[in-house]
Every structure is written in structure tokens, then in C-alpha cells.
Length: 543
Image (cartoon, rainbow, N blue to C red; front, side):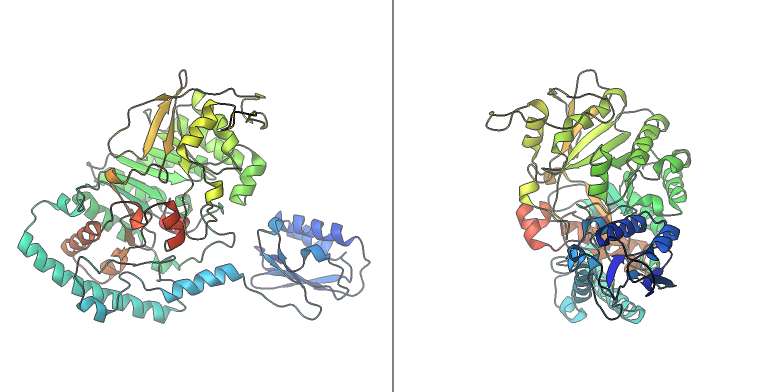
């Protein structure tokens, strides 16, 4: 039995003993190609010509081909096949065996073992200091609201609400003693960092499978009932705005997959005068057709994630097609968004050996378009394949842009293909000029003389900027993350659904902010983050 993978129309192929045979290698390649192009009528027709014959019947989740003559080639047996999106491939001479994807099951099992919200039992909470122990190790993996069944999930939420209630009693007593009269003080941490920027993830789903964002199997998704509803998002935005947040970015997953995205943008931009920036981070696949309505609703900024300008490499890194759609979306964003610096950004995660030879190609995008190109150091997240050997630092990027020589200056560095957009065989070294960075900026900005846009570097690993961090994150399932790299979370969703008042929500948010560590979630450096492996995959945090 060969399990090729999933098919949208839920079908399975099975043997029919009367069809003539042909080349096994050709048959397999042809079937895989037709399957992944989703041309099911061709799959069905071609399958009938396989050695031993086939018939077709429906199955709820997989397509399986089985041949009693064992005509499938050995190179497809008991291994992972890159052409099949890393689906597990096995063979059996008896009957079809429905198999699971082991890494995905391992991740699911890991999630079941970890607690949600506070990661403390009520008994532990009773004896804990309200502001010192309650938020420790709160969400290893993806957060534990992903449980086996609804009854278990309901029980956990009830326990979380009880724990939150006990915590709030202690926080109220502290508030009476301290009597803060300025709500914005709730968003100032022990290192005197004032938090004014909120990133809200609207969905865990994504229509790409980027290698640095999630494992090839994808990630286990929670039911929609576990995610924040539109009204819950509105209420939390109101609370954060009253506490001093003036900048909001909508993320995912892919935020464009959320049907009420335009309504959310419109609500934020029209109801809060002090919020002067409503941005969105997207992969750009479907952006161009939604952009006019989003701009009309009040969208002010767009960040588009793009890691290569070549179609074949785009498929390799995202495991999907669609580069031309992303490029069209970038052009549309430059045309439709209001004029101004930094309105459109292209974010490129740089990985040695994959796209480090494309840095100059990306910079050329800023020549004729008023967009900013930002190169991001690859960051370790749960099961994203991060490797120090493929990590490229900020200084190395600068060197790659400004010189054609390797570090030992002995051989030419650039042997890449022509620029896909400018039809140049070779882009000479580019000399960047340093610009002044804004307060709380995560980007080190440069300019190229004669270019309309800027070039920036996000140096989270080699030169972290945590001392001026002003960002908070709200996950799609309603967890507040005060640090991108920290595993600590608190469930504002459960607090909302437990009937906690606005004032108590402010106390809860303030307590979480006060627990924020100085840098990198307390892990020290990128190697510490990798070793801890205690965070969510990036797609479940919000890019």
C-alpha cells in the first residue's frame, strides 16, 4: 500500500486485477504529479492503467493505491518523499493500512501533556506569589487548550477561570496598596519599557507551509470555538486602547483567511482616534483582491512575507505555488496604500544556502517602488528546522551585499542566476548608507542613493533590541504573550468568558507585563531558545 497524501475530494484508489502493466517508475511519477496538481479526473483515469488495475472509491481523508503485484518502485517505500509534501510512504501486500504522521502526532501528544493559561494547579496557585509565580512556563508547545475532547477542554477552562479568580483577588489587594491612577502604568514593565504596540493574531490557519514557520506536517489546529470571536477581539482592543496602545497589527496564520477581516479593520480604525496605525502582515497570496476594501476600511500599513524571487525556490520554501500572486500584491499595495514612508514592507527571512545570494535582488525592489525591504535573521521556533549552520547574521548580510568576495577574499562569491525581474545577469555590490532609527524600532535602516524605498535589517539574534521593546502579542486563541520568545502566556479568552470585568482584565494584563523578562524570553541567546524548544510554532503565535 502506498499512501501518497491527502486529496480534497476525499477519494481512494484500490486494485482491479485486469489492467495491463507499464513502467513502474513512470507510473509512480505520473500519479504523484497528477495528484498534487489536484486533477482528480486524470488521477482516476490514469490509476486504471496501473499494473494490477485499480478501482476508485470514497474515503474520508486519504488517497491510497494498493497493488497485489508489488509493482511500485522500492525508492518510494518506507521513506519521506519531498515531492509528496513529506507524507509518509509505506507498502503492504495485504490490505490498506491508514497511517498517521508521526511528527504531528508527537506534537499533539506534547500539547496534551502541558497545561493552559497558568500551568499551575489551583493548589499550587494558592501558595504562589500572585505576580512572581503565576505566569511561569505557561504554554510549552502550542498551548494546551488543544485537548482530546470538548469535555476535557471545558474542564480545563473552568480550572483556568478559578485560578484567574484567585489571582485577581491578590492583584486587587496589591492595587489598593499601590493605588495607580494612570492606566498606562499597567503596560510598563519592571525595566521601564512602556508597551504601546499590540499584535493580534486572527487565525491559526495559513495557505502556505513555510519551512521556518511550521513543520512539514503542518500544525494541529484548534476548533473555531477556542479562538477569539469578533466581539471578543473588539472588547480586548478597547481595553488595550484605554491602557495606551496606539498601534495595532493584524497577523496570523494568514489574516486574509478570516472572513470578517475588513470589519475588524474598519472597527479599529473608526472607533479609536489614538490608534494611528492599523497594519497587517500577510503572505500576499490573496492580498491584491482584498486590498481595495481593506484600504477603504482604514488599513494603513502592509507587511508582505517573501523569501525568494524565483518560482522554484518559492515552492521549495513555502511548499506551495503562487510567487506571481505575491508580486502582484506588492505592486498593488504600493499603488493603493496612502503615500508615506514605511507603508509597504517586504519581509525576507535570510537562510544561508537558500536565499543569501538574493539579497541584492531584493534590494532592487526598492529602486522603483516606494517600499521597504527588510532582511530578518532566522529565529528558532518549535519544530521549524532552525540550524546554526544555516543562520546568517546581520554583519554577514552586510558583507554579502557590499562585496563579491568570500570572507577569506580568495574567490568570487556571486554565481547566481539573472535577476528575475530586472533581466540583469549580474548585480554589482551595493553600498548602503545608514539612516537614523526611530524609538522602539526593531529595524536598522539604510538607504541606497537613487532608490525610492529603504533597506532594513531585523537583528533579533545577533544584536537583540529587547531593551526598547514595546510589543505585546495576542494569539488567535486569546493568550497574551508579552515576549515573542517566551513560553509564558495568560488566557484573556478564558478571563473574558469567565465574566471578568474590564478593570480586572487590566489588572491581569498588567501582572503579565510585569513578569516580562529583559531579553529573549530569558533564554540568553539563539542557542538557548533552540535548546528550550518551549514555544509555539510561529504560525500559532502570529507573525
